[in-house]
Amino acid sequence: MKYDPQITTILYATDMGDETRPVFRFAIDMAKHYNAEIIMLHVVEPMSDMARAIISNYLDQSVSRELEKKGMKSVLEKMRGRLEKFYSEECDSDEKSTVTIKEVMVVSGRPSEEILRIAEDEKAGMIVMGKSARKVRGIGVMGSSARRVSRLSKIPVLVIPTS
Image 1: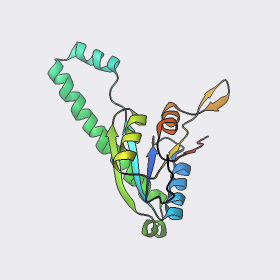
Image 2: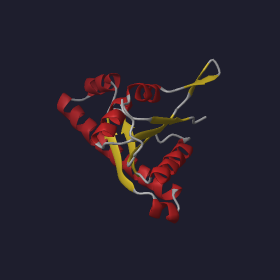
Image 3: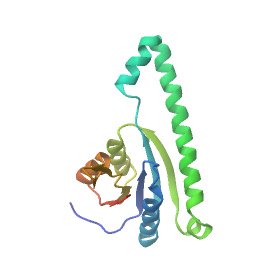
């Protein structure tokens, strides 16, 4: 892989958890440093097969599909609103004038796959995301999405510790 230090777009991937603000601060700092735009991304995981099976036991298949579709659309819209509100709360007017948010995206799918797909589609030069650590025997370990993205990405991935 040939590394081109000219980064014009940064993909900030967030799980909208409690520790997202420090990760976003890093994305802002990187955007200022590289004079880059930011794409804010949140991925909503689809309903599990187990949940789908339970619903299908009580509802007709076409009704359950329609319910799932409407529910996912509602969730995506709410998460987009939360992400936009997060940006407006976190950035002061000076930062809003110096850092451009190119797009706020909320999509459904497997987080690592969607992060990598969108980074490629949008020609991002860097991905910034949180570690989303969980404890195993008292030691924080990197979450599966951060692990997969950092392992499979063709561009630099900045993984910020969140705990």
